[in-house]
Image (cartoon, rainbow over all chains, first blue to last red):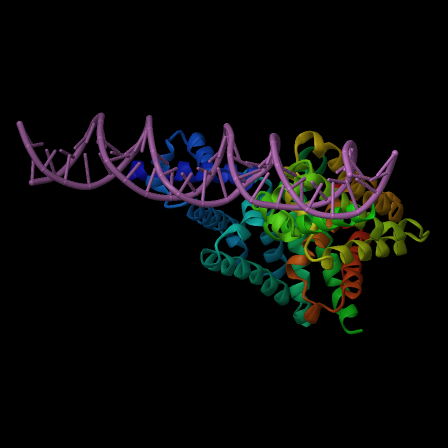
Amino acid sequence: MQAYDQRYEDILDSAEALFAQQGFHATSMRDIARAACISVAGLYYYLPSKQQALSFVCERIFDRLEAGTAESARLSDPNERLAAFVRGHLRYLLTNNRSYRVLLHDLQALDRDANGSTRARRRRYFQSLVDLLTALAPHAEENARMAAGALFGMLNWAPTWYREDADGDVDAAAERLTELFLHGFRSGALVAQASL
Amino acid sequence: MQAYDQRYEDILDSAEALFAQQGFHATSMRDIARAACISVAGLYYYLPSKQQALSFVCERIFDRLEAGTAESARLSDPNERLAAFVRGHLRYLLTNNRSYRVLLHDLQALDRDANGSTRARRRRYFQSLVDLLTALAPHAEENARMAAGALFGMLNWAPTWYREDADGDVDAAAERLTELFLHGFRSGALVAQASL
DNA sequence: CGTTCTATCGAACGTTCATTCGATTCGAAT
DNA sequence: ATTCGAATCGAATGAACGTTCGATAGAACG
């Protein structure tokens, strides 16, 4: 059923945009219905509940995020892999409106059970960066987790300050942030401190 | 009126804890009343509205955050100033339960007018780090904003991965993150890329 | 003792919420 | 021509929401 799928995606688009703008709890099913040009009852033909809507929206966002960083895994040089990962991650955050906010702010609003799958996915995504950093600096095993946290922080915070006019296009910003991180990471700051 | 003030602070404590745990929109006035051991009507003797409660809570959090980083301004050496700022900021984020979440997630839920004052305060706080970094590397003027964004990201993200058993105490983590950032910043990664 | 003021409450108000029900339209299949 | 299922809707349901009202208890004060 092609029409059904199209409508379904449109509805998730509307929900995603509203969750991103106002947050999950501040968005009502009536808001979503209005944005998707459907009645409230009609909405329930496509979505079993508001919780499930959030769950579906989160999965979709993760799909796109992972698709954007998948290129990284195909590279062999660790430095290039990191650069590609940062680029893919940052591209998603700084385009696609502000839908990343759903993951960052509203994931905790998921029920504990529905949460499980998505939270595992988040952990896996985080771990992929930890592994990447471990490959980059094998001596830094124990510190890769902290470094990955620091790098994700740098990236996930970017939407709050990034302005294209002042900071250049997204890929340029990604390259600068990669360099900033790599100089600190390579210098072994984390390792040196850890051994004290 | 001493009893009044004490009760008032208790109520804001309860509201702050609930906002931090569940988010502003997921917290009801009934939740706050229950946590503060007062009736819902009694709550309105102390708070004019839920919006104002959020506003008061945000101001209080900013007060504490600024008090924790105020030491930094009294130092003269730029490196020590940065270290003190990072330490103060991180101390607040990683203790005080998770009340920082209110600023990070719920500030946008403030009305536009009430928002004004608090948002200005946020900008001032951000700018104080930009100034600090400019003093640290005078050649980097234009990049201080980006560097400040990157550093704030590293710090604000820390609560998501920090574990005392694996990462040492808060001051040690602050020192390691400062080093990580400084090595990247001093190496001029941002400046070099900017001139391309 | 009577009055006023502070702090508190139960009960209600009107609104909005997520969700459900029964009915209807309409193209496709029998 | 009749049946059927997919897609849609208006209207309702009960619960929860933020907020207000009128009353009350007791301390403070004249």
